[in-house]
Image 1 (cartoon, rainbow, N blue to C red):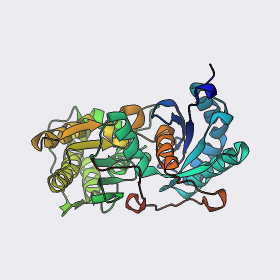
Image 2: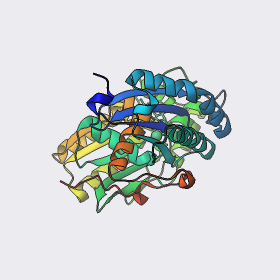
Image 3: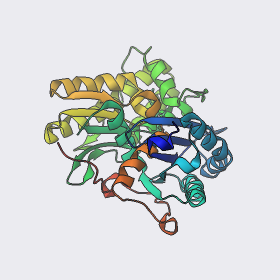
Length: 342
Ligand code: ATP
Ligand code: FE2
């Protein structure tokens, strides 16, 4: 029997908000049938948006084909095409949106615009079976504590300046660490931190429910440049301070919301030390702690495909003419009618 005869429905998701061009395919029961990606690696410094967008345009045909091959389906088998409509870098978002529009028009199927931050939360819930979690979403561009209330994911606390992943990445670059294939800079800091022993005095800035990481980044880089401490000790101290700050805010939000689950999602979720700190506060509050699996932690097409399924099921499609990208689309501006508070 072919897939169509089984009447299975599929959504293809395109993710291109930053340095990855990724495609995933989910069926309407939450099975991930494909998840594949091509990464843009800058020759120097951080992401150059136009160079990344050029990479995405070149990578798109092969990544799309690979996803369809993995899922063993044809374009005509798709029910909907989802794409990350924001937030993200303009040129990168526009490239993904162009690919999505072209594919949707070609096969004459609806487009679904997905919020990237909502997608990080939904893939975490899907994979860990968390129902109504307090979520720490920590990535290259975001650090926020969210929980569902009255139709949306509300923000209970967030960074006032740079994101946790960005803080680790910039420190790593200033320390001269290089991108290795398959090893994000944050993971390189994690490996070094595991060998650190001594705590270097660094700032700790929590303001109410929010936190600030830019002073910590400057202080860590300065401490390293002065040469009084080893790279391992500075990595260790940077992690201890930054992770304690986000853990403190998460714990306060947990006490306030009285959620029974804590979910860690986004690229920094791969970090074992951060996982351990959050596990300990969850245990103190009798909450269940879950972490998004590694392959769905950093940006991926599967999370867009699955959130596309949820939105499509509630009729949330977008006409091609109105499918412009939203560079600063905050998570708490997005209605999530598929979420039901238990
Ligand atoms: P956003 O989701 O805010 O748009 P992004 O898409 O760039 O940002 P992700 O792909 O979700 O972010 O996450 C990438 C970040 O995760 C990078 O900053 C990277 O260094 C960090 N990261 C990946 N692995 C680890 C790790 N083991 N420890 C710490 N950080 C990590
Ligand atoms: Fe992301």
